[in-house]
Image 1 (cartoon, one colour):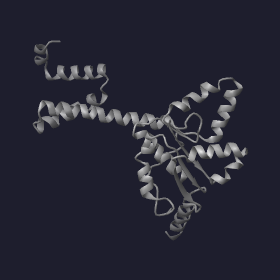
Image 2 (image 1 turned 120 degrees about the vertical axis):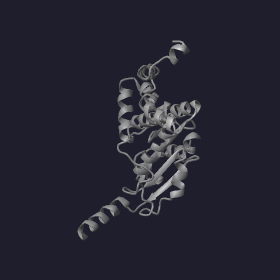
Image 3 (image 1 turned 135 degrees about the vertical axis):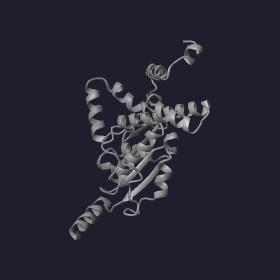
Image 4 (image 1 turned 30 degrees about the vertical axis):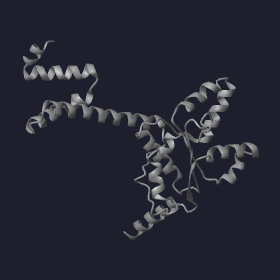
Length: 246
């Protein structure tokens, strides 16, 4: 279509052409926001360049948001958790400044490990998921899994002679929770454990294997101890007391 024909379009025809072009070019945000942004641009007497920049930036922002949503969904977190929702006052063992520094995901970029050690109810899983979510929002691919599930997958894969194929997806992602295979000095591993490192011999009964695993995880690692007092239990008691006083 020539520029002359573009200038000859009626308002209705122009709207139809924009709608069709956005569908063909796969620009859903431009298509959805164009009418409102066009009216705003007319009211504010924006330049053509300013209007176009606003449209394109809206599309870019929405695409980034959708990519983050897809990465978070692909991570298969068991529930939603955020750093903002973590109560640092209830669990003073966890340093807010340290967690906020981890939330920058510099450790992920460098391929360094992260270990969260503490008793049940002290916030390990919350922080693990929250930091994983931050990494996903910053563009990293995430995979969340439980150690027992992974072991079962690998045993079954070995029985079926497809172990290499099973391990491959875990090696490709940028951050893998509770998995060590194919990760050392390549990509980050974040792990949460109720046991201190000295107690890992309960799971890894071979002392040399246990030492090797701990050594791999702790080399240049960020280690956060969440303590022994269950803040989850404390919150439950506080809610019960509040309900009783109503």
